[in-house]
Length: 157
View 1 (cartoon, rainbow, N blue to C red):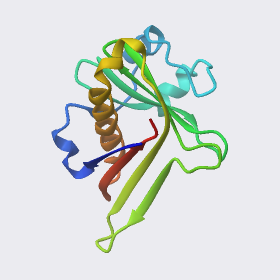
View 2 (view 1 turned 90 degrees about the horizontal axis):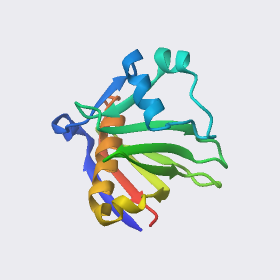
View 3 (view 1 turned 120 degrees about the vertical axis):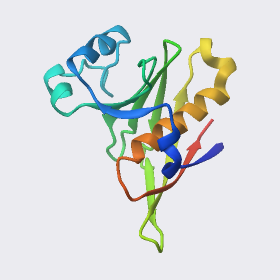
View 4 (view 1 turned 135 degrees about the vertical axis):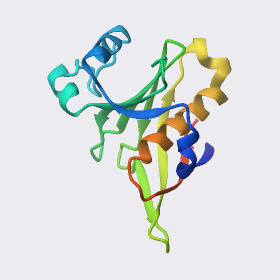
């Protein structure tokens, strides 16, 4: 197990940003074969209406929730980095994907439990960079809420 901590309140310094998916983004979803948690194509109309992701400025880094997240099914995410796909599963099998703890100052600290991560062979030598990028992406993702505090990501490696 590897545990990394990130102060989500500092994510305003991140090169990543949370944004709505637009019509021009659909080609990237197709190019990288980003599909939902069940391996099905996303409904593009729904993506354009409700879809969001975390990306860098030139969208060479993409972090997208794929769905899932019931008691037995993990929450699933994909990270596109250096044109390779990193798959993440959080929780599932009766285990929680995230835990939120409210502090005395009414700020929530979050722990994300990555139960499985598949780093492709071409990124195997960059595991530490990939894990740090995942934590940064989760920090930006969690910053959507103004009451976000410390973020901890536990990787089951």
